[in-house]
Image 1: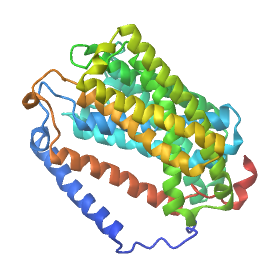
Image 2 (image 1 turned 135 degrees about the vertical axis):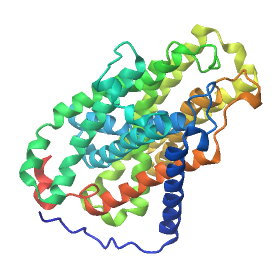
Image 3 (image 1 turned 60 degrees about the vertical axis):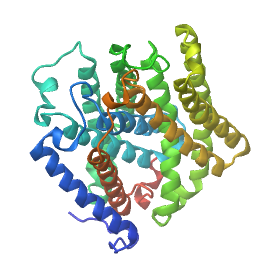
Length: 391
């Protein structure tokens, strides 16, 4: 088997970034050992009243939402026929695949008996449980993303015949991926419908599944723009002429679409607020926090996207993507942590330990490290000449 050589020198150097990355990974491995040898109580502030902490709120809820760029970009290119977004598909699929893989990886830290994670799917399916539906969809979609990613790896390995067979499955995989994403993105919101007395009324709504699904669409678009911006800055030398020439078109196209989706999301949030008649909460401290999320991280970036699309201002669109990504993360953390158990005294509320936060940083750093390795070696940001004319 002949591996293709990367287009540029990929020798690891002792740069400040690599040194910090190494330190984070070493500390993360130590905390991993403490977690699995000492139990959850060794490294977390979780208890029976607060069984879900930052590993669910950030690693799972935020991770799944921000990995939505995979199904959004694939659907745009292969279902709606927007071939001008083709260069964004592989980076989006890679980001989504690593995002979902890290979600499953992080679940092993959060679950008391991680070796039983496959049990509900293969041995005792709980078909009436939302958690079963989420777990099954994430399991299936992770496999779909892996298959969608394999053409790049197979090209790198020189296995052209297998690669050609997998490529023929693209449309089927894309449709299956969209269906699965629609299910589990919305079901993650439905998980919190069981806790109306614990979640603050401004964030609790019977429309939570709709909110989660719609916000995942612009989260995915924003993540594609955000990830592309970082790739252009730090991995510019890995990109071929096609990626460089199509980049601005991807940013502007996704900005236009994201602006419409974000305004729609803002509208249904206001409709939900009106139906539940929770206007009076807006004049409290929690109301100010809710408005900050809704105005500062939805309405503002949505408006910025619209202006960027109208003026074809790529820089403004990239700035808007940062606000939108932060806004989706803030929303998921508000629902799962900040506005959850809001009525309890501060002393009884959950706050993550430094080891929980450090473990989450370790997991994110691990994902970035794997992303760097793959983009340095495999045709993610460039195409091999023999495959350029296939799309």
